[in-house]
Length: 158
Image (cartoon, rainbow, N blue to C red; front, top):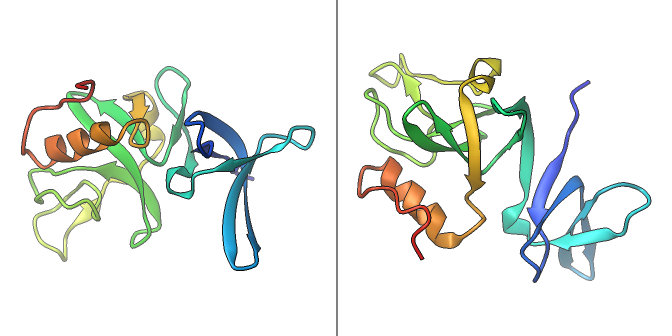
């Protein structure tokens, strides 16, 4: 059985917490929590920062989560769950397709022959996690701009 784990930023504190995700609705107000283990308190988290573990580790043994910024060869990209394909994949453009934040990188020139690259064990020895799109808003925009070819990567610019 596959282990399911999430991470998210604590509400108002901006630090990562890891564990099981619990969504609770009281009086039509939806609240998200991460439960680290049964003996620890629930941590309320910012819903937009919830990231699911892909089940894979990077080349240094770090867990790869949805939303992680990774280096793959010479490419800076991000991990994303693509509901259309039911898979985790790499965000970016390739020689076969223009940048589209809603489509994974893949191969094949036409829509009928397009094959998305599935994030699989093949990548574990080749990917290095270097951050997450939720760490800083300008980092996310820098990654999107870089992947679409608009500008150089300004990942750590203030």
